[in-house]
Length: 485
Image (cartoon, rainbow, N blue to C red):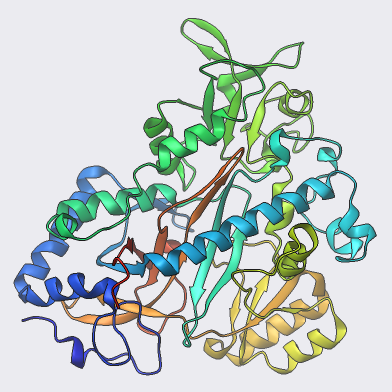
């Protein structure tokens, strides 16, 4: 027996698989029993098989560095994260609620701006946001939806409370790895899928296509949908190509598209020009259209904003949706939900201090050794300070940054993120911190992935789960126990 769960050590932490009594949680019981029945050599064989499958399937991610860009095999742990269906249903409802409210918020900002006039959010907060696009004012996309694909990051604290850590509404990535993780697990531990009721995730590409097709401005049976990528040197290119292939649509670069005099978008093909109805764009706003944004952009399509504003093409996510990505705006999401939906947030925010507020900034500066400080518009774990793990010099540098640009920073308490058993390099099982990124689709209807991308900090004690900074991933199982306790 390679694993004895009673001796598995996770002091003071919430474990996703093992309860405080040292016994597997009900939804994880079958998994834990099976893992405990495997010998050390069998566990090692399964881990080796997963690494071989990842190489064979070509699952990679790109790390940018001074020595050049490097493609690396996707880091994967064979012990999945498990969530019971009843708990997940509440999380799912909270995610749908959140995206609905955020879309109402974005639509209002580029329309009547009622929420600003009513003083719920300070106007200057929005006007100073680097992701607010004045070029989008007056546009009304289909269904009033701007963010059609959202990846919200969830964390669980030591007391078991699930929080939304942040929302990603510009070009959220990672869903392809969620899908591939499941395929790897089915290869490596196929016996576990025979008896357990694990909700599937492989319907996501069809749900994504249906969401995109519903946005078509033309009433045609088969709208032309394309995925717009910056190209092969983008860190998420694997995902762009994967999703295009899974949906059965064309993967295009900016040079493959053109906008004609009637403000319609066409795709260059060997058979001639084909009208494009919907573009799932994986390019940042400022590179989408050199006529409107960066004039030297070689990634976008001249005239694309004209075509979109004219209603001749749908863009997902819509330009300007990133205004709700701002971590300062994040602090107001409970009020946003209350304002537009007249509801209380189902999933709470992490308590957040706004450095733009004098009193809150003073508290942050006095407690930098206890807080996590984040810039308002960075992603991937970059540009942040984890106070308890930072040096005195790093804290001093951040204090200066906060004083210089208070609008650009928020701070949050350092959460004791939940952990899950993880097979580490020496063959032992140890707790590692993790988060979860489910994906929510919204157009005429909304869908939430059954689980999402679980990211795990592979270094002991680390809270940084991003793959670009040494993190890995796990398959995420939503398990129906049929009401068993």
